[in-house]
Length: 392
Image 1: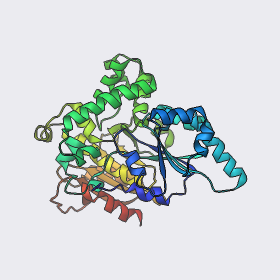
Image 2 (image 1 turned 135 degrees about the horizontal axis):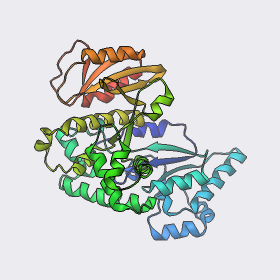
Image 3 (image 1 turned 45 degrees about the horizontal axis):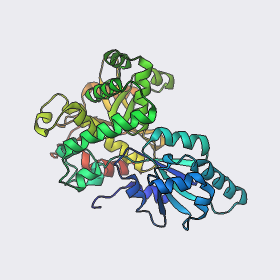
């Protein structure tokens, strides 16, 4: 592959538990990435014969494998193997011998996490993989028009003959509207699909579950459970409001973004970049792309993204407050066309009384003007700049 996945470094350097679970949507390259790790044998449980042998006698199945470092692809299709994996880990721990080394993948997150929770609690580490970042694609391919219309889906960047609109439509109808619905046992399919469309139309806005529930004809609790389900499957990511009081933070409205901006663009109905560029939706979608780029950097370092937004009672906002190690922060405004922080925004930041090390204007613009109160960081520079401040 001409691109690279920075997360490979995390995989090879980690001190994870014996069972490592790689989560992520379909078609993001989970199996392809793991197969790049040396010394592993891949078992494909979407093969009916392999799945049957493993389920009939899991212990014998694993005993007969020549390689003990394994990638178990689509493992949730063979649930009987999970108690056997638990037995093997526990046996090795008792004997204090070399622990097994297994990677588990699966696109059905509901079944996968159910099996891991029931059999492998305390024995499994989780890793997340999503679509390609601008950093991974490189500046030539990770342009704003390309990211908006293709997202970071590997196949769309590898095979230029694949038509993005059809590919993304198929992905939405098969993975999101069929596989997730089936895996989670959702009965109100039309309402679920409409909920996702409304979320796409409200990217970067304050989340109002009551309003969505009223529009789709279900209760608030159902909408909230669906949103959390989509986050579990790697479709959505929330940004919580910043507050020093955790109780207050939990009751304030989050903002929801799509992990891959291409899905949000397609679900909004855009088929061409130029009409999108001049539409009111563009600002929020650019913000979505910035959130994805920052969160990818953190996830691929094995960190849990701690990104907030700041909003005052007077509705003065800061788009992103990125928490660094040792209680340090970076404040970032996302702008399609760079503009410096306003006086009101600077006052809001001062009122937080936090260790704010830098203020950024994140932009896809390549002009890089100089401002008095902030640094202009292009999207292609986000990972490099975060690496610099992370090491302070």
